[in-house]
Length: 135
Image 1 (cartoon, one colour):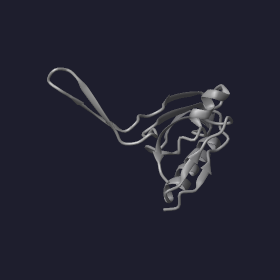
Image 2 (spheres, helix red, strand yellow):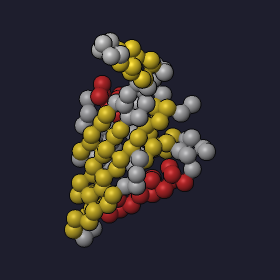
Image 3 (cartoon, helix red, strand yellow):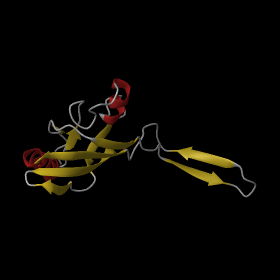
C-alpha cells in the first residue's frame, strides 16, 4: 500500500453531496429508557462525498477515469481543491470537503466512476468517495 495523495483532475463539479461521517460509538439502552454511550475515538470516520460532472468533454471524463485507475492501482488517496469537487463552496465548507481541517480523513473512490454519454464528445460523470481514517 502506497498511501500517497493524488490530485483530482482540474474538472469543475456541477453537483455534490457531502456527509461528514460519524464518530465511532455504541449506544446501550436500558429497559427504563436510560442511554449510555461508549465512544471509541474523537475523530470522524466514513465521510461520504458524491460529485457530479454534467456535460463535460470526453477528454475530461477520461481524466477522471485515469485518476480512478491511478488511485486504485495502489492504496492511494484523492486530494480535492476548490478547482474540482469543492468548486463553488465557501472557504469554510470547502475545508470540510477537502478534509483539511485536521480530521485525518483521506478520500478514496467508494465505487468506479459512472460515465454516461450525453451527445457525441460530451459525457456526464458521477463519482462516489468515502473517507478513511488512515495513519
